[in-house]
Image (cartoon, rainbow, N blue to C red):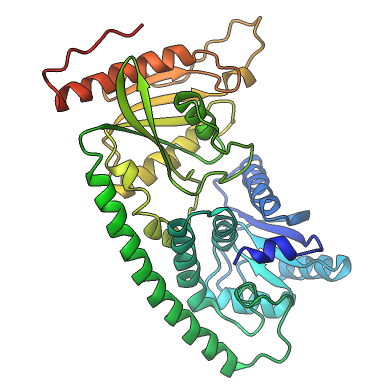
Length: 387
């Protein structure tokens, strides 16, 4: 399935579309559009313009109003735009109407994220999970202009003259694929469950956080291994587990997929087996990009997702990363300003993984947490002090 991204020669162009409800500022909408543009660029799509409409709720027929749709259509036609990307999910009927009116490929936010995951997935498990989520999402949204299945078939562009009969053929193909992928994933999940059972005598720590906050960089620092880390969205899709030893006490450290607002529900469902690393962890390292203006909103997204996974009450170290981007080394900056430090189940620490600032303090805090859990497993173990 990844061949599409390797063989595609021309860069596709896009426009972005968002709604701004009455209780949302234009600045917040612009921030969401920036994130959407980052998502599009991750797929190699070049954004030329953004459209925004002040509307409390989506138009039931076309998501945006008639006048705004005509404005988008005029620009798409004039600039020969390939794709229109919506920052929210479109219902099947909205998708059909918008595709018919605009005459180009339509992405909504969920499909964009699903395709990024498809591009990033490396292991058989991750590929199977994403393919399952993507097919489940596509199933009710097939239209005569829908071209995304061409990636599975190796073709490009819109199929000429595709009719209702071909749509039914596509639906049958998707139903068969969903059945096959569910069976394949069940087999992989069984193997992984057996593997996780063998780890129950070792303390487990899991990295969680919004996408692109520096989790993989912290993983590299703690595990002293070279794991792919880059300034991009969803650099990590496959769960990575490494054995780490601090002061003779071993533990397993896992890096999991980053979360993001409006993460497709089908994706969360499909990835729940991978996210068992989070559910079964003894300690969570919640990494936060404190330099981001919306870091508190990002934290809420992560905490809400953890609650959906049944992991909201885990013991947690909140790692506020990227302090190097907040102030120059000569400035006296209060990193704790505005941060709630009253929680009994959470420990807050401020670091720069890039500059390796306060990493020693992070290791000490992590050692103390791991030591407590290690002593529960091995009560007679003579644990050393941190040095």
